[in-house]
Structures are given as C-alpha cells and as structure tokens.
Length: 135
Image (cartoon, rainbow, N blue to C red; front, side):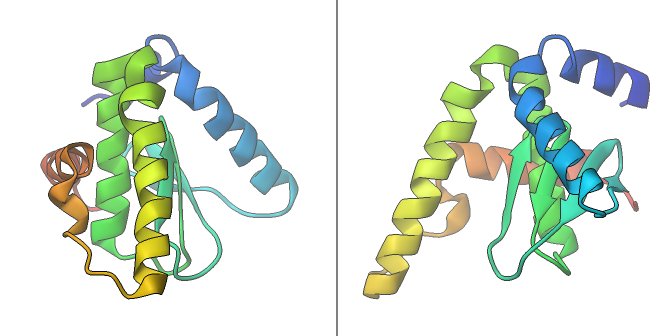
C-alpha cells in the first residue's frame, strides 16, 4: 500500500485510535526515544519481555522485538484501516483485556490456548504477513 494512502486513511477513517498513538509517540520523542519505521508504520521499542501494543499507524514493542512481533503489530495497523472508528471496540479493548487475563492465568500456571486462537490476533498476524516486507 502507498504510504500516503496508508496515512490518509489512518488519520481520517482511523483517527480515533491514532490519537493516543500520536500522543504516546510525542511523549517518547520528548523523552529522547527515537522512532523507527516498519514499512509505513512508526514504532518505538521500550521495556523488556512484554510484547507489543498498537495504536493505528503507531505501535510500541519490547526492546529487540522479533520480526514476527513487529509484523503482527503492523497487521493491527491494517485492521484499523478496515475498521476505523470500530477498532477500539472490536479489537483494541478485547485484545488488551485478553492480554491481561492471559498474564494472570500464566502466573497461576493455567494452560493457555495459542495466542493466535483469538480471531482478531490471528487476523492481525495474517495481515502483517501479507503486508510486511523488509523494513
């Protein structure tokens, strides 16, 4: 996808979830962190062993994140292009809720289903694989 079209849709139809992404990015930049690009998306690496989170065209991942993790978070960018204002309610909030439940169950030693067993996570992985290329 063309970078201009990517950002035009992110900042119009997909604006709702990009607002917190932009604000968090500005805080990171003001604190000295440098943004990176993963294809058309802007991302930051921070912290260790926590995974990642997406806010539209912006995502945040653990330091030394794998290409698979970055690709997955990039896939969420495309979910936002499709879902626009529905993204927080259809993907972001349910995914965050599930992340915390999984963390709690992991501490308890409970068995966990594969991460991509949740529909929006497997969709993000597929979209990331489809749209990713060497960054």
